[in-house]
Amino acid sequence: MSTIIISFYLIFILIHTHLSFSTNQLNSSSCKKGNPIDECWRCDPNWETNRKHLADCSFGFGRNAIGGRDGQFYTVTDSNNDNPLNPIEGTLRYAVIQDDPLWIIFQQDMTIQLKEELVMNSYKTIDGRGYNIEISNGPCVTIWNVTNVIIHGIYIHNCLPAGNSLVRDSTTHYGMRGVSDGDGISIFKSRDIWIDHCTLARCYDGLIDAIFGSTAITISNNYMLDHNEVMLMGHSDEFVEDKRMQATIAFNYFGEGLVQRMPRCRHGYFHIMNNVYVGWKSYAIGGSANPTINSQGNIFIASDDDSLKEVTKRESPLGYEDWKNWNWRSEGDMMVNGAFFTPSGQKSSDKYVKASSMVAQPASSIAKMIQQAGVLDCQIGKSC
Image 1 (tube, rainbow, N blue to C red):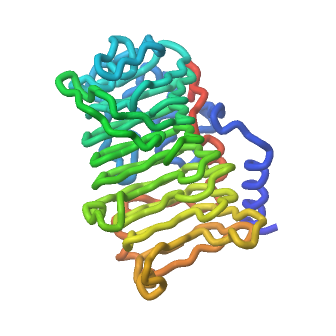
Image 2 (image 1 turned 180 degrees about the horizontal axis):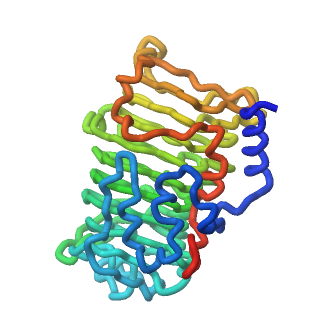
């Protein structure tokens, strides 16, 4: 049996035996799996003591996101008393609005139901490792006009719109917020952002949206499920500032119950590598306004529906005569169950040099990586 056929069987076994992507754990003898992010920190049994080492482990366009690495630790102790205008000390909201860098951790397992969107300040890390931390059943996270944010190890689900309310976004400023979209994580006019090892599901709008000129973003090792419009990258076809957007989407598991936008891209440059996609209900990767899409080493597993085999979708009022020049390529992707990717534009590597510092693993080798997507079960004193 060929290596590729064996890999097909491996992927199907991983997906259809209902492995728990939110509670998997590696030990020190098995953490070397070709995932450069995880290899950087997960073998260390003293990860809790060395938490801030995580900030040195990102790669891709968000590789310079240091979050709260250069600040103090802050422990969230209160999950119940969210006050959007005058945050209470000990709450997550109090931590994220501080003006100084902070590495935010948690005292125990917590389910946090916010009253308004959580508007973050710059140089913050939200690090859920060691506990089960959920943000759910209310408005969720907004990264608005800031820089250097890391969100790691949080289960974000069932997010809802809110707004027309006063919300504080720093120790010295508050303002009236309009109605939020109900995203899991909304990135607005921000840069140096890294979202890693989170689980996201069932939000009102997007799971992760990045708009209004946001750039330098890495979205990695996340598990996404049960949602329609998964990720929007770019505000509108007319908003040309999104031409500067650069995003890396790597090692994610786009799982059951997803429909479309994994991601949907406008204008910018998107390196989509070493992800697994299974059974999309409309399309996997789409876009408009001439984005560059560099798809490398992904596994695309189509459903049995013959009308849902195509990975890609382009939206242009001029049709093929317009999008035939958009630079979209598939290199080393594995197509399963009839899946196919429609390329366009230039295939030469010089059109994709922005990703030259990143090396995609062969698609046939990524099954074990994806088995570890989503929130990890990190236990103190053990490799995570």
